[in-house]
Image (tube, rainbow, N blue to C red; front, side, top):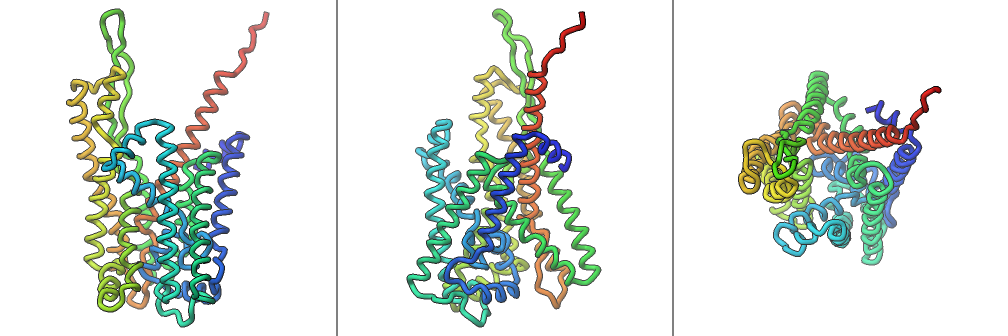
Length: 436
């Protein structure tokens, strides 16, 4: 990886893209530490520093520590990520959205615009919830002093507008990275959020017993290695293309369709984490027995009900997301139009059934892998934690998936650009005339 970045910095165009991406990331992190207007910074930092547990750790990870600090970029990238996932799900049931997705560049531009509108709507909803919890003391329970200097209607409205504007700026920064930088902008910003709070999670190891700390480190390294191995694993379906010669067709070139074991990526884990985070976030607004039940069963990562719901939802979303992002009929039809075929199968429906069968066989271990990866830290912490500490396992499934997945994808994109420039340089290389 270091070699790839060293080679990239030798090329002026790639160096400018990398430096531009780093500058945007620095600006993004600056907005995550700048407090929003009307927030008592001293009280928020003191109460957030002493808070711990599944709900608080999840909020810290998903927002890069910005939500509990009530900063300008408190919402982070989650409104945009959630809006993108929701539109992908709606494209299955709304014919208009499905037609837009197939219209090429113009359709994608319209889908991007709809994603922006939905992002703003979700940002208003999320910001309103966060401000209401901050006013009622539910954001950081047990804090002896109010988090806001003035909890009136106008200061609260200003705080909501500031957070919504911050979410829009984050969306703009992500699009800038995608257009003028390196890699996918929103994925890199999410990667930045996870990396920003990961050292704090790592520091929790040192408050445990020596034996527990050793087990945690070894398990974390094994977890990272396993994620890298599975993320690179794929099943290659061979494709042959006929080469017409006169009136006959002979065997031509060959290719393959790469079907990853984890075809769904990190989307099921993110969507499930966000879905399970909503009841815990809204629990203080319910009050009474409902709040107690939610905090006891859905806000504690070690509870069996939470683990069961977590695993089942991840598996269900993995199957559902793969089914809407990979259409075997469309892929088989595209292979047939280009004169290709899978060896031993007729083009058309037989090829589509074969692709669906292979994809189903791959999704089963992929969904199990995601569920085990997400549950392993919870189970390990429940077994190995120190009775006197209330700290969670630092190598969370979501955080490891984001770091490894986005890191590998960004390095691959840089390598692809390096290979493209090496190839273009080879084509443009002047030929030295032979000596007379």
